[in-house]
Each structure stands twice: as structure tokens, then as C-alpha cells.
Length: 348
Image 1 (cartoon, rainbow, N blue to C red):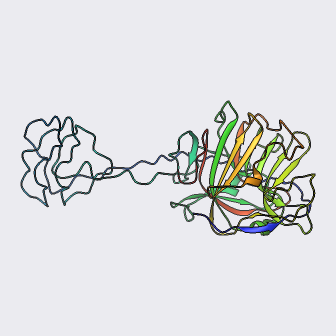
Image 2: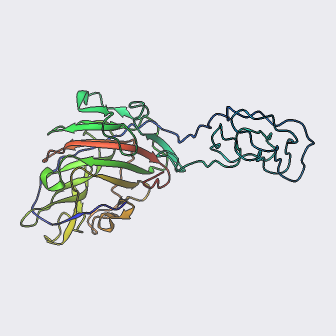
Image 3: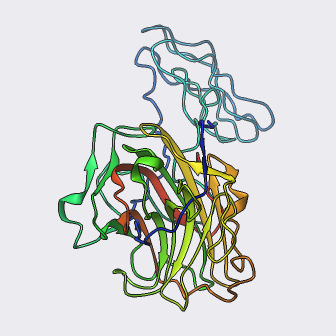
């Protein structure tokens, strides 16, 4: 779902803080469990082996009827088992060819359901936080600022609650050794902010590609800050720090060192879920961002407007959460946080 976005206008210089969020999300596979067989019917027995057609298994049992007869074991066609027994529910997976026909439960009528939050190809780390912080690593300095909230989930009951009030370490991160050797990886996180981007005002970071757990290394920070135009306005941005001169590229196209711009950028509203995606391409010094499946083209960074090339570090981790520099992000909820080698999209 696309959410309304607030257009903001570029603004004055800002202090660079960083809300790096290293999400250690536990991979939640999307498994479907098959319902129980109908309690009223019995398995169809007898009959020959079907080598080409579907085994029908006789008529369906309906709450304690007589045993079906005449059904066979299908070895070539899909096993249907007759009409689904009214005492049982339809199976959730498609019936495998050659499965035994049963009188109580249909083996072909079910479906696998919608994709889960951790089913996309190439996922390395993923967590929906239903069972706690399982695969992501909580920063030891985060303490009570990072916790699981079972009252505020995106598509489920739980999410990761981050409280970052002028704090630089309210985040989770990928476990050691999980970043691909190519240094190219995608990150997806659903986020719900208690404050609007305008209320946050100064520089903060949500998703950060980094070389160290603290702020001592090189960091590529996807977050928001106020522009250096007049008047200053807060919007999504990308900030590079720790390797030579610091650069920021804003979601209105404004770049540090360029002419001030009053072009509109992207600001987020409070109390609604946004799907944030980021692509850190360390092999060629490139960054891309998406908001609710739509690319934020002004944040497709290659050389910061010709001012910096070969800027990407040798990433060793990703941080997801809240890191404040000149702003205060407040409370943010994250859900379905994933890192992988292919684009993850919002609902996989």
C-alpha cells in the first residue's frame, strides 16, 4: 500500500548525527500447517492402483458415515480423495501426485496462502520478532532502548520497539560474517514513527551500512535531516561519514556543496507503517532507496554529484534502529526486518 507522503522544501545546514539501526531480525519462515483430517470420515481403502487418473476414493464421509470404498492409491494423477469430508478442513498444500486417497480430507483443495515476511529469494537474515530478537544482534549499549513490543506489529502481534532520544546506539545489527563477500546487499524494514520527519528535525539514521558496531568506522546512513537551504526543512537523506569529507544527498536532489534548493523532498508522517528498502552496493560505490515499493530517485547515489567517487567502505554489518546526531528520532517500531543478496520487496 502506498502511503501519503509530505513534500518538504530544502533548507539550511544541519549537524550530522546518525541513527543507525542494525536490525537483528530472526528469520521467520512462512510455514503453513496442514489442518487435521475430518474426524467424521475414514480413509478409503481397497480398489486398484490408478496409474493415470485421479483416485476418487468414493463419496465423502459426513460426520460419521460409512467407510468409503473403491478408492485407490494414485500413482500418476493428483490424489483428490473424493469430496472433502465435512468433518475436516481442506488441506493447505497441493496434493502430491501419487499420494494416498483419503475419504475425510481433500489433498488438492488447499493453498499455501500469502507469502510471509521472510520468504524472498536471497534472504540472509530476517526477523518478524514474534519470538523475540532471534537473528539480529542487539547492541550491548542499547539496554532498554531496544525491546520487543507485542502490542504493535505490522502484519502480526510483535515488532521491535526502538527509543532513541539523543542516543547514538539504539539499534540492532547483522551477526558477524553475514554480509556477502561482494559487499552488495539489500535491506528491507517496515517502520512506524511516533514523530513526523519534521518533528525529528535534525540528523538521524534508520538503516546504516557500516564497518564497526560503534560510530568509529565508515558509515553510510539512510535516514533524515534538515537541508541547508533557507528555511531548513527535514526530509529523507543519505549521509556518508568517516572516509574523507562528509557528504549528504537529500531526497530533493540537493547535495552537500551544491547550490541551496527549495525543491520538495520526502518527509514521513507519524503513526503509520512505511516500507523502507535500501541497496548498499559496495562493489561499485552505489546506493538506492525505495519507499513503499517506489524508488526514491533523488537518493540513487553514485558519486554525490561528481564530488566523490569510490566512496563505499568494505561493509561488515548493517544497523537498523535509531541513531541521533543533531536530531531526536523518539520512538520507532520496526517489523519484518531483513537483509539479503537480492531485492526483498515489501511483502516477502
